[in-house]
Length: 228
Figure (cartoon, rainbow, N blue to C red):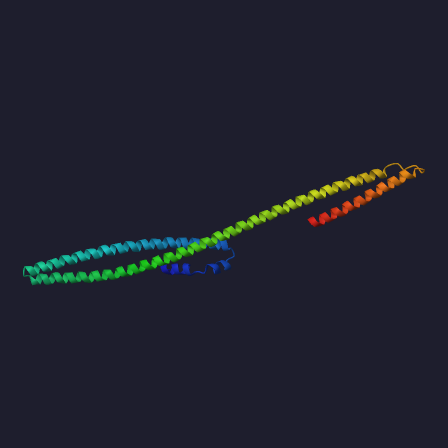
């Protein structure tokens, strides 16, 4: 696979579709970013090599032009000395060098085109990489927010449960106290037959305790049902 084919595959990939189809979007996104980073390193390395080739071509073209000027000078010298044969040979060498220069300049044009394409692909890849990193940051932020909300919800539920348990224990203690109080009345020796007033007082006290006990039990059941 050529570097340009690999670049096209990475740049043209639909990020949203890939993430929608992935079982683990965050893992998929990490792999995509790693692939882009590796590709970017490879493209920059290739760009550096092409730049080195361009500099070498420019030096070669300059050298050919210098040699071409030298043969031009030799041809002029030969003409001045009446040596047309040497002047002709010098011009032939000059023209051969001109052909070589043309070939090298054509090669330089291809190198410039490759550099322009590489630079364009680098810019596109960097933009795609920024988009992916922003998407990753957004995913991490959403994950953190969800985690925090769950922790708060869990804490609230724990606090509410503790309060419900505390109220339940308070009501239970009151009921235990009233039941003990009721039992103590039952254990009092029976009143004398002629002490009707004391008997009615005891009866009234037991009735009040029974009513209050029933109210507390009802309230406790309601609280327990609400907490559940």
